[in-house]
Every structure is written in structure tokens, then in C-alpha cells.
Amino acid sequence: MIKKKAKLIFKHNSFEIIEEGDHVICAVSGKEILLNNLNYWSVDLQEAYFSPVEVNKKLKKIKLE
Image (cartoon, rainbow, N blue to C red; front, top):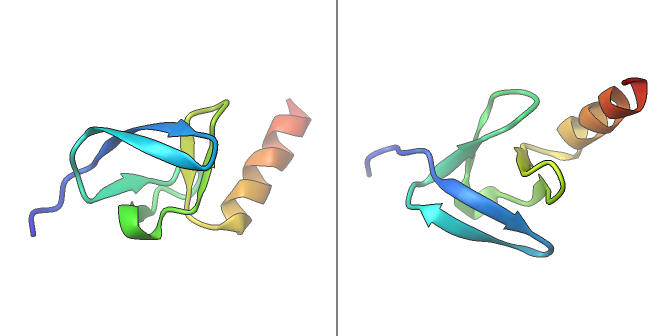
């Protein structure tokens, strides 16, 4: 399988694939997230997160701004 970054629109409880691919990039850590493993994202920021750890880091950063 050829690795290709997907383009998504994040919705509440789902996401829409705009451009086919097998992964997205975590907005905080830069780690690749396979679409099959994608569980965390922000609808408001339209960002994906690798795990709850990255979600927490992002929320803390937003609060400091």
C-alpha cells in the first residue's frame, strides 16, 4: 500500500474523506495516524490528534493564549 496523507473534514462523531489516503498527521505531535485508528479530532479547529495526551496538550495551549 502506498502511503498517502488523506484530507478530511472533521464532523461531530464522524469525518468525511475529501481526498483519499491512509493517514493524517497529528496537529500536536506530528505523528502519523492511520485512518483506521483515528479517534480524536477537533471539529472547531479541524485538527486530528494521536491520543488523549495530545488533546490535553492542545487544550492547555489554547487556555494559555
